[in-house]
Length: 628
Image 1 (cartoon, one colour):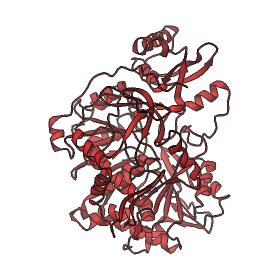
Image 2 (cartoon, helix red, strand yellow):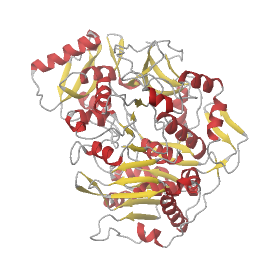
Image 3 (cartoon, rainbow, N blue to C red):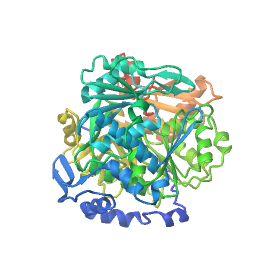
């Protein structure tokens, strides 16, 4: 069995942090801080935890019975209290917590005091329905402030929220409600997308027909020309909150009390319910938001995710609010009504921290540099990337159009990890396309199949020690949780392949099941895709392996062209020659197909297994997370 994965990508240049940014960063010497955190990780995490509010202290920082962890054992806390009460009792009471902008430009602003009042009213309304600690609530809402309010209200009472992205079908929603056995569904009559009205309530109506545990459905009514309520079990959101008190004590919860279930499938099959808890998740999201983005009180922080995904949970809702930050969140797509949408919001609200995805960056690249050039982006200080590995070409474009002096925090983490695990900090030299080094307290490595560390080269990304924000289990399926820790003994196996360079920088190369084996060489698809995207005609690419009589597998590429370029035999040859030049003969795609779109999850990750199944005439399996 082959142990290692070939890496063909060239490392490129090193970009050093601006002196001014480094001088004001929370962490100014990564090497020193990381060394101390790894020498005594429990002490590191304990010191972080002490910056937050606990109703009663822990007896032990970590209880580790491989592979089961408990953090801050026997302590009591509440993440909603730390997001709200802590700030309302300070000068931040009247500071802006959330700025929300609709697709059409409607603006709603919540100070910490106003968000606190709304969350308390919602919590009291939940109590009035007879919901108790541990009950599950499914939240199926578009990207509106009520989504944040409902999440924090559930957390306040120890209810477990299950946020389901509002683009999911009735069948996908039904499966998630049934697995969680939710008693309540919170939804809206409609969402809006590119000026189209998207009915959501009929999706819920269809889904709950087969969900016997659902007792009530609460509906946020956005359309004012009629009622979306169709049965006695349904309640209008405004009526539900109208007469509720603005005071509701946050429950004092054991630190291991479940906070939420988030269903993920991505590149795998049946959706799995990842469980995160109050205490450890709170500590992980708090400190990563603070150190990675260098979040200060004067910042305006804009994360483009939806709270329906883990990025929205951790880095729109919990992480920034734990830090007392000001969050900008906007409904709608990056290219509607035009490709200047996000750049306009950055200029208008003076955004200083901008966290987006490689998929969105590549989409905006398609429209050229003239769009960002129309706007004043000088308020920006720190950039972030999340999702798939960002290819160097997209990294360089993002860096260039925002002023060539804002460091990009290329973050690697997963729904299962809860918070960022591998990332630069603002003091760390950057290599375009590399997520650089592990976050403080995180022992990340690249290993072969037997768990042996690879000094430099390609292998499997693993985490060798527990961390506070790690998932605690897969809901109703603990055996599935064990797979993460038993695939490579002694390690959490992320399922990603990764290359470690001579400086110890980590270069993520895609999912382990996205490795192509050509003539005995194991090649990560991300490298070939990155080489294709570095060609001037290409905006996006996806690569799969196809059976080949002599080589075992051959590479096939699916390519989206930039505007102004058309398919010709000469262009196909150019693309193959370009990969040959960038990576070598072994990585050249035998087949190149020009396409207009690629199958993606709604969070923007390319579903290569769907492409492969279609190509080979196979069943693609669960495709509930597909955007189209």
